[in-house]
Length: 276
Image (cartoon, rainbow, N blue to C red; front, top):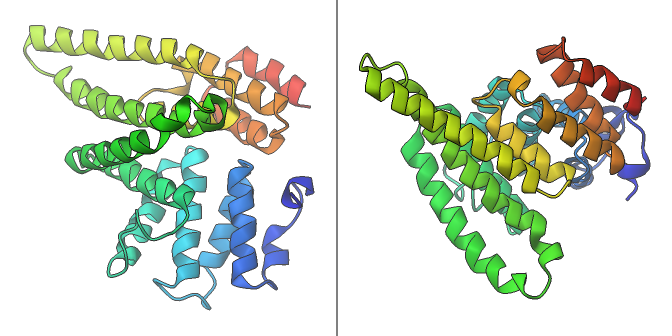
């Protein structure tokens, strides 16, 4: 599409300031699908800071969703919490945030935002309830299609996989609390269970197709509980896949994040050379 042809230095904020809201939303949607999250974040924030769009307006709500999505994929969990909370609060009185769209992709993304917000806020019961709801509806929709065209539905199937990991992150957080228990046996059992989850994540990651959006989603979820230094191979795989798929803006933003969090890792310097 046209947005794909525009380089990373294109000033979307300036151009969109003279556009109709519908056109601006279309550009944000394109940036989202192209994994150009830094630019999406900047554009969404420019709309949110525009006094012409009052609270609870459709333009503002969709921009909040895009800002939350961008922050999440940039591993900026504090900003994600802020935008997700505003999105949820300003959606009250309208349809539920998970249903405020006729677009299935938006519905899934709205659910996803609410799930991850509840996990970060440690509202685990609410998160598990929503995960079960998404899982049931996704399975009902996707499983009949598997025999027809597995490749076509693979990325949608990955949503189910990422939600499984979201539940495991909840379990991991709960186990981390048990690992501080004064009772030695409880501590040891908790630590062993946490180690099994980490090993499971390593194995599962090797089974994923090298599709940058799929790899990215899994790493965003795991990074709630795991430091970058424990996931370097996964992040290198993501950056490599993004470069191969010409998602250079994604590769750059992820590489910058990794370099800032794990500056001693020599492999990131090698990947920087490949990106240049």
